[in-house]
Amino acid sequence: MTRRVARRVAWAGAATAAALLAFAAGFVLFARTVAGYVPDDPQRADAIVVLTGGELRLAAGAKLLKEGLGARLLISGVNPRTSPEDLRRASGLPVRLFSTRVDIDYAAHTTTGNANETKAWAKSNGYAKLIVVTSAYHMPRSLMELRRTMPDIMLVPHPVVSNKVHAARWWMDPYTARVLLAEYLKFLPSAARYGVARLLGWQESALAAKSHAAPG
Image 1 (tube, rainbow, N blue to C red):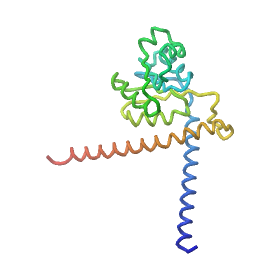
Image 2 (cartoon, rainbow, N blue to C red):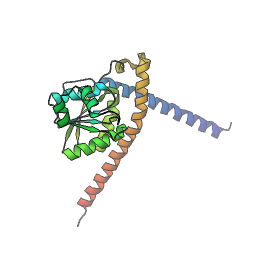
Image 3 (cartoon, rainbow, N blue to C red):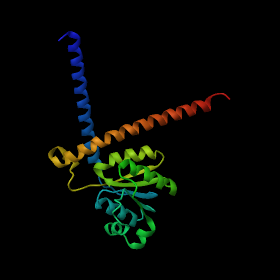
Image 4 (tube, rainbow, N blue to C red):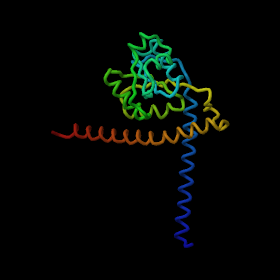
C-alpha cells in the first residue's frame, strides 16, 4: 500500500469514526430530550391538535378540550376506516361537544402530512397558539415538522407518556431502545428539512432587508 493510499484509508476511517460518534451523541441527546417531555400543568391556547397513534393521545386531547384549554380540537391522521362515532366513543366526549368542537383529518398519513393539515386548519381558523398532543417519543419530530410549516404559530407540547417506554433509562430496556432508535432515524430527516427551511427563511429575510435599504 502506497503512502497516499494509506493516508486516504486513514482519513476515511477517521471520518467514519467521527460520523458514528456524532450519530451516537445525537441519539443520546435525543433520548434525553424525550425523557424531559413529561406531563405538566397545561396552559390555555387557541386550540388543540392531537396527532393520532393511540387512544392515550386522543383521551389526553379530549381532556384538555373538556377543561376549556382550547376552543376546538383537531384529530389529525385518522384511519379512514375509523368513523366519527368510533372516535367519539374512544375520546369519551359528550355527543354535543364532539359534534360542535371537534374536527377530523383523514388526509394525513405521516407526521409531515399532520403538519400540513394542521397548518391549513390553524390558518382557516386564525389560530396563533396550539397545544400539541402526541407521545413523548414522537414529540421532537412533531414539533420540528410543525415549526417548519408554521413558524409564526406558538406550539405548546403536551406529551403523552406510555408505560411501555422508559426514556429515562432507555439503555436498560431493549424495547424502549428500539422505539427511540427508530424514531431518531425518522427525526434526522425532519431536522434536516427544518434546518434548510430556516436557512432559506433567513436568506429571504436578508434579501428583503437589503432591498428595503437600497436607495430608490
